[in-house]
Image 1 (cartoon, rainbow, N blue to C red):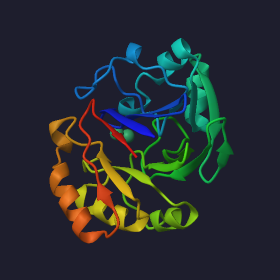
Image 2 (image 1 turned 30 degrees about the vertical axis):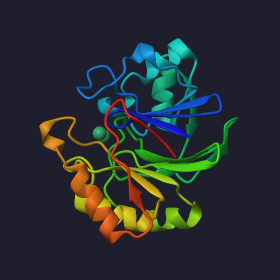
Image 3 (image 1 turned 180 degrees about the vertical axis):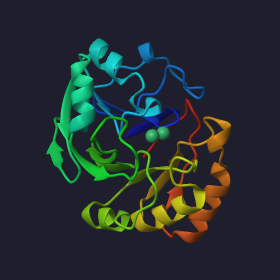
Length: 222
Ligand code: NI
Ligand code: MN
C-alpha cells in the first residue's frame, strides 16, 4: 500500500486501483502538497466536519464521483450539498469493494449539530490502517488493538485541538501499530510540534513500533 501525505490530516492510500483519501483539506491549507483538481480518489473518509477536515470533500465527490464515508450526520450534510455519501456510525464495520471500513470513536466536536467526530480503521489490500482523526488519547485505543491488528496508525500530535506529542506516545503504546505516522501538527504556529523528537520517544518507549515522519508531498510504502 502506497501512502502519500498531502498535508495536515490528508493522506492518499493507493493499492490495486483503489485510492482512499482522508480529510481532504487542500484549499487554504498552508501545508497542502496537491490542489483539489490533482487528486482522483475512489473514496473519501471524513472524520468530522471542521473546515480543516471536511475541506474540499463535497467538491471532490461531485467532480470524481468518489463516495464520502463518514458518520450519519456528517454524511447527510454532504449529501444535501450534492455529494455521493455512505453514512456509518461508531462501532459499525462495512465491507466495500476494496476491503472494509470500521468507524472508531474520537473525542472531539463533529462540526455538525448532533453529530459525532470519528476515526477509521480500514483494510486496503493486505494492510490495516487506523486514522485517528482529531481526538484526545483514550483508554479504548487498547480495545481497538484487540479488535484489529494495526499495521499503520496515523496519529495527531499537534496539541491544543487534539492530543499532543506526549499523549500520542501513550496512544502508540495502546495501539501497538507496526508503523506510526504523525499528523495534524505544524500546519499553523498554534499546533507546532517536533515529529523527530516524537519518533525518538515512541521508538524508545514502544517496542515494535517504528515511526515514519512523512513530509507533505512525500510517500511511503508499507
Ligand atoms: Ni477538528
Ligand atoms: Mn483539526
